[in-house]
Image (cartoon, rainbow, N blue to C red; front, side, top):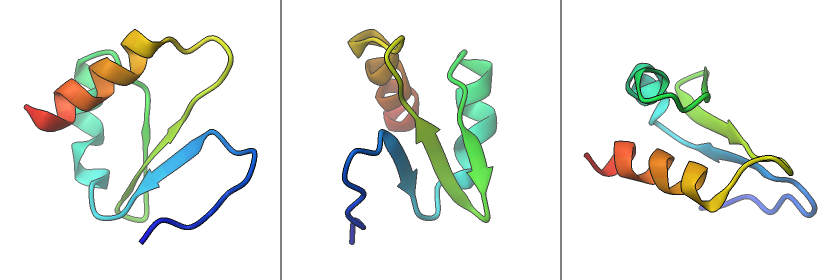
Length: 59
């Protein structure tokens, strides 16, 4: 279940940390934190960046 984080653009997905290598090879910078996939979005990220992350995870 998602944990509310008001004002935060950090997304952590439990159990997907092992996908960090796949995402890195696709040019998506995320981290593996204790087995959780962590992505931090900011002003310079685009909708295309988010789509790339989701495409790699779906593939």
